[in-house]
Amino acid sequence: MGRLRTILIILILLLVIGAVVIFLLPTLTPTAPATTTSGTPAPQIVSNNTVPTPTPQQYVDLVIAVQELPRGIVVPPNAVELRPWPLESAPFNGITNLEDVVGRIARTDIFREQPILQNMVVDNLTNLARVGSDAAALLPSGLVAIAVPMDRLTSVAYGIQDGDRVDIIVSLLFVDVDEEFQSLLPNRVTLISEDPESGQLVLTTAIEGRVDPLGFANAVVGPSERQRPRLVTQRTIQDAFVLHVGEFPPDGRIVGVPPTPTPNPEAQQADAGDGQATPIPTPTESRPDIVTLGVTPQDAVVLTHFIEARLPITFALRAASDTSRVPTDPVTLDYIMTEFNIQLPGRRPYSIEPAIRSIRQLVIENQVELATEESGGGGG
Image (cartoon, rainbow, N blue to C red):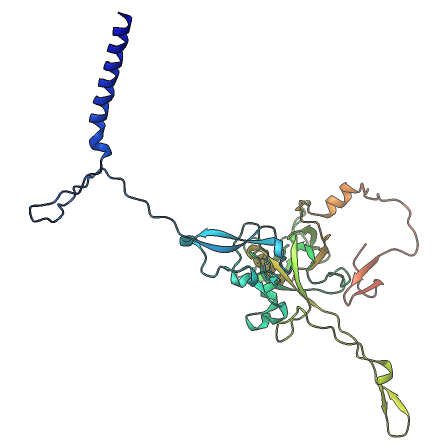
């Protein structure tokens, strides 16, 4: 009985396997394309639900910077790599060969993961005159160049040099003016009286002043001197780039230009014709009186305003590694009195002789001298 049951189970399994094979056989057997009665292949019916095959994206190998490359550095071999870049977004002047980059000089700052373009590297900075000035090549991106006057005092004793960073300090003098006339106060007062015989108004002497606040009749109080301006000093533009100190040469080349050779003292002897050697005077080297700064476009407008207003501009030299932006307070007489605890001296029934009417001060022509009463020194 048990043996019969086993045989039945085996037969049932064989029947099931056979049915599955019969059902799947048409799908596993390749079928020949249908043909028409003439023997030509019948047109295939394509379902509208077929997903189109996506077009593969094309790439091009570009030279990419794998580390920061500061302006002027010779590009080392390990600083760049060839990497695939989508063709549709590849720059037209991208470089595709490592040999065109390695060993050349970075004309501008090149950032990490940035494709290197043909105008970013040069063989020699001294050859840039063919494509523009050295100043334009050295100027950091986003800055514009503007020339500013300077002298010995404002230029840190001529200490600032090309490539330095400076802050700009400006001093302003403020005076009170009439809002309508835009002229210095006090206004000029003209007294008018009536002629008792003709009845006409008669103009009398013009007086600068104001009506006496004490209430005296027909009294005008005038100033004893011209209005004293009020001085305020403040640091304005910060971290300006010193592009060049002095005037640019006619060809614009400032990079790689050899220094002027120092004349030989023995060669500076000329024969005067009588056998005596006449020394040739050594020309005095002139100091620069102008500096070109790289600043933002808005700061360039500010500097132009300073120059047009003839405001004194002083340069403060920054440390080479200092790029901070620290706010400062405007300095006035009140600030100095408060910050340094300067007490206003009181009036006393005694004094010293001779009278101190001026103090040592800086005067034009880069001289430091003791201004005297005869030389027009400021009041004490």
